[in-house]
Length: 288
Image (tube, rainbow, N blue to C red; front, side, top):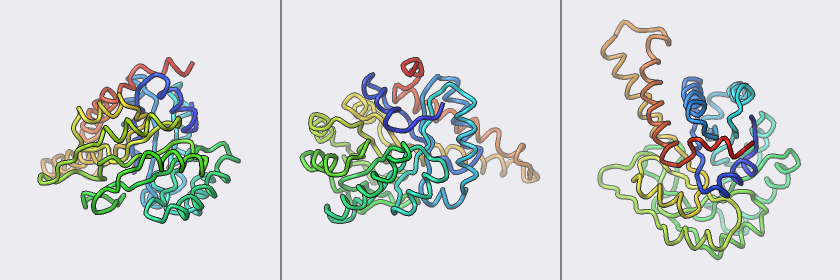
């Protein structure tokens, strides 16, 4: 069942769980994620960054739409960190049901102007819009980028930004970073800031950079208002670590059906861990 983000997250917000948003950069990752959400009866968000979108093309969106049509599991297809109005429009035309416009590094007025323009276009097509105030950090090993150091979301500004733009979901900056954290980089989520934001706004809240954080911090974020958590690096590390192992142990392998099954199984374990951590398992029942 294909849904937009606004309707999907409204249920999560009401019932106090978070929906996993997995970055899908290949058909193998799509198949793993859909297999697990069906097994665990979890709603899901299938997303891709602009770079991933450019790589896989519109055909991958059609594969996602097909998968959504074959199941009663609620599915949203989302553009992650859209870098321009034009990219957002391309995603809408390709069939995505939600887009993020990320102008968070621009001055406030420019961020509002770009975001509002995307909102006006997207809502005509019943596509929901996510945006961000403050910035997500970077570990230096992710194509999704980020800034050196986190600019935390100011709760009062978050409320005003949502009112000024009309966005449907809001990405908070509370200390996460894209990628896998190096050993010398110890993230600490500012749950106090999250609580303050939650008390001031009504729209569902989103946490970016969800890979590689402590489980207890992620659980606390869910308990305090986060309704969507983005996961990219964790599932890809599991998948490609096993790919390398399989190829090293079997240098003669060349067929995808030889190389990928064990990698998909390893990836699936991480997908299941995230679903259970976010408390989205067995939540499909709330959509009917």
